Length: 379
Image (cartoon, rainbow, N blue to C red; front, side, top):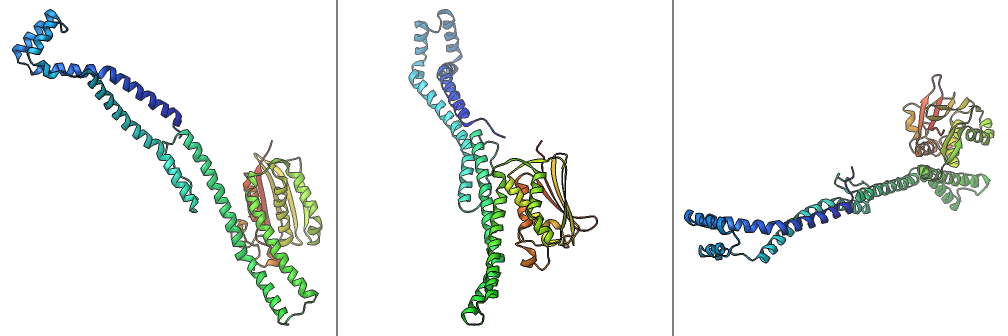
């Protein structure tokens, strides 16, 4: 919860200090002198005190007779300088208010110290956001919100960097090893640079290019939510995606039927969303060749739904949701020829998540696999 603003608190303390100082200078000197008179009279004998009271009643406290009689009783030793009393009162009030201001300053600056410590942690690679108490002022709380957003962006950048590094270590090593071995063999005369040999090298280079493109696509999909958005007809986008891959689908024997009624609108980047749909279609080509499949687009409550159902071999054993993790492949052998880069469904999930949706992977009641995208429906 945000407290009062820093400007308001500083102004309030300043006004309060001025009021306390003015009241102290006005009231406390009189109180000091009243206490002085009380102590002096308490030090007198009962007889002298009675005589002084009688004289005050007859002549008044400000009369010359009363003052002379009081001096004769030793009052001159109790005299105080009014200016000195005021000075001491003001100094005392200043000390008290200074202590109050010091305590308040510590309370106000503690959240800033926490933020400063968090900045140092972030500079050293620790992306944890600061934990501010409810004492943070509205300005500091706003600064904290911006800082948390910044650390989230840095964490995303770190994830993308780790992802790219993992891709290099995970899958590029194999084609590079093949390239090195074949080129070394060519140098030593073990291979002949014929068309088949060159085609093999080009195939390995093409695989590296594909993996790099997919890694970049996944990093781009994770940032999709921060990019441009527009009103997109999911039915029209699905039809366009199917039409663009129709030759490949027919060549693989996939009999795909598109079932879409009235327009269903979502808010997204059509290019990024189309890429996600194409990845789903390419999975059909790769994992369900020769099998019938359907794509249905419809509205379900507050969701726009695209459901792809195939009647192929279905998901491998285990939880299908694990296949949306980076570098997961549907075939157990993890063959690059059949399994692709292992980033297709990861790109789909990252894109859907960036637009506030969910990706569901499940088995069909009659076998096969179901891939379902749910996005917030745009009315």
